Amino acid sequence: MSEVLTAPLVVEFPFTRSLGPVLSAFLTGLRERTVLGVRAGDGRVVVPPTEYDPVTAEELRELVEVGSSGTVTTWAWNPSPRRGQPLATPFAWVLVRLDGADTALLHALDAAGPDAVGTGMRVRVRWAAERTGAITDIACFEPDDGPAGDGRPAGHSGEFADPVTTLTAPARLDYTYAPGRAQSRYLRALAGHRTVGERCPSCHKVYVPPRGACPTCGVATGTQVEVGPRGTVTTFCIVNIKAKNLDIEVPYVYAHIALDGADLALHARIGGIPYDQVRMGLRVEPVWTEDGRFPDHYRPTGEPDADYDSYKELI
Image (tube, rainbow, N blue to C red):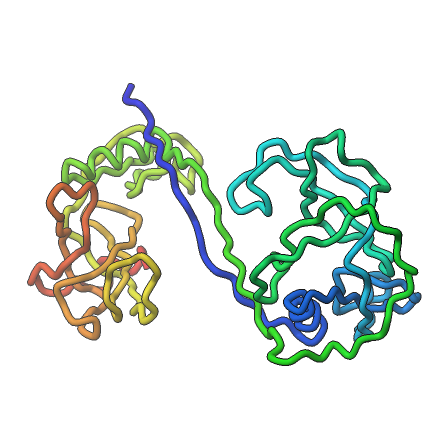
């Protein structure tokens, strides 16, 4: 039996949100080396501030300034920092209740080792050299030998020059994809410029790409069937937004294509024709690049358009 394929994959995109008055003031304050909290309905000071009361869900707007030093309430040692974490050397994750706050803030503590960390120890903010209005403006916490503050937060208007109004955070997932035996056979066939599906022994439908089992009948689909290479556009969309790291000029067309002999449409890019001339029923064929392991795109074959009744069940 052939070895199942695997490949490292990365899914990454930036997430942007508007901040609103409370979080805008909090992040702008960090840029200005000021830590703000919000007073809840029961009088507690919540840091980081929330827009709504965590108990009553009422809207909160009363901002207060708390200290930049505080007390560790709990901690965990991180011996092997990962990419994107606050420090590149071993550190402690700590919950710190800043002076004047009633809740704790999660961040990193730069300490010599786990023996140097303890619940109740005093710590202070180490500010980043360059601050932009983000939680990373707190580079980390560090041990503090100074006395505790008076614990009385001061009122704050939340107003700063040039406030931060939006936050963009990268979201990234690194993982290893294993397509399984059925799709491994499919990918190997593509590398040989062939498209292979699998037929259900019960309903006799041919699925491309194969799943290893029929999604309708729930039985294994072990019989391989070569389909295509030509097919019919069943539906399509025009892409007008250029994707990062994708060297394709917009606008372009992505379509569902029912390959001849297949009972399931796959999706692929359409080329070799103006985007506004792509249509349902268009007959297409694959175009392979040199050393390509899968079709780069599909282009018109020049055949007459397929009759709607021949592909209406695959839309």
